[in-house]
Length: 110
Image (cartoon, rainbow, N blue to C red; front, side, top):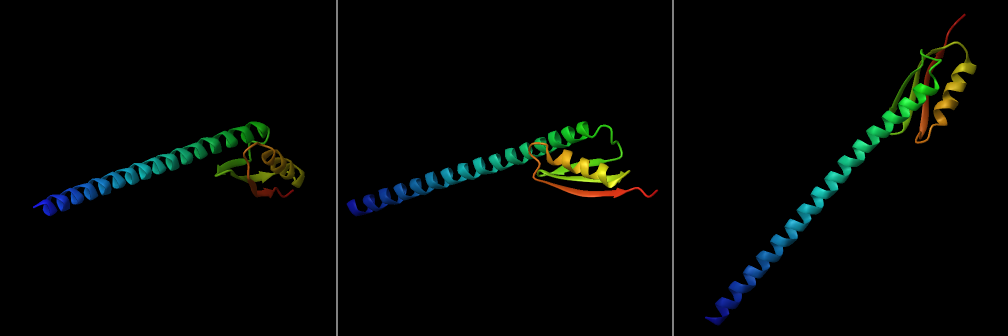
């Protein structure tokens, strides 16, 4: 009879330990998912800020489009000369948070 009670207690203790471990793992997984979501939202906000800063710096070049994804800036549109395009690329590169600048700029034909 004592053996049966001891086995029953061990089974209950094992079940409780497993449930606690599962709950902790579940909570940790939820926290990781929340942190990943927050990081992604932070990246989107940062990309918007980068785009805004570059557009403000290039306000005299309305024909240049600016998009940013994960810190990678893409400039597009038509510019009057290679000098104008080069200056736009340099301006975008100087903004904090920019990892890379991709140019899809074309030079207008005369």
